[in-house]
Image (cartoon, rainbow, N blue to C red; front, side, top):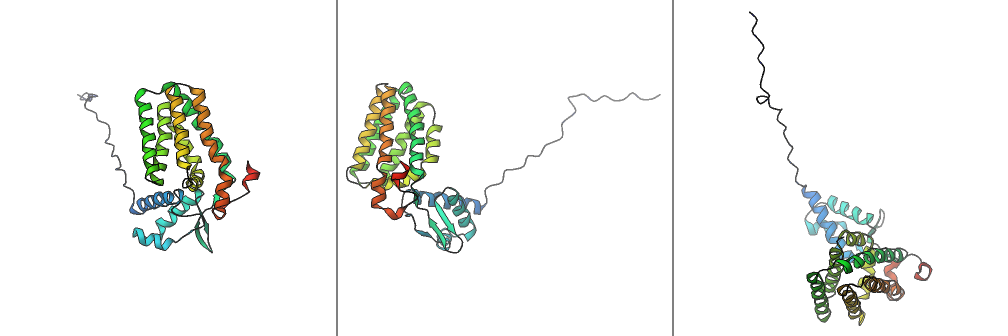
Length: 253
């Protein structure tokens, strides 16, 4: 008699075990590259490293206690950003501010932030408006303390808050991508007497329009605020001609 086949219950059958790979932690070199890139980028944007200034790989490697490889990789990333120039036979230098790139970047920023402030005027809550007014106080405190870095950070937060209350925080992210050279040039204007106070007054006008729900006025005030960056380029160029490169501003406007 032939024994009947044994039918295994589906509950008994188990799928083969899948071994999931453990994600690898970033290597020390990759971590060093990211850190060096981030700090050098901040130094360049905030004008602690001036346009045309040499960057010595060996000194940076010694500072971080790493080989030159992560330093070189960080510098290549900065070159892609247009913030450094690498000359194989001469060395690496902080890139000068390209005059031709400024007007277009300012126009793009005007469009992005115009949209943000328009939506913010329609959607802002009382607590969000209070946060903007608190940020204005922080800006005034930075002005009184002559803290240019503190003011720059408060200014950046001001614009980020508007994008958040608009419901489109990515708008500020896009603006940051295109305004890197504008930020460098703008840092040159902050020490000018009365400049920061004027900027804060412009910010205040934007906040008042948002608080009143006047989208058209808020967008107009923001456009006038950003347009001031465009009109101030010739003065900054004349005061610091070595920091700029490209066609004269008169030909780009």
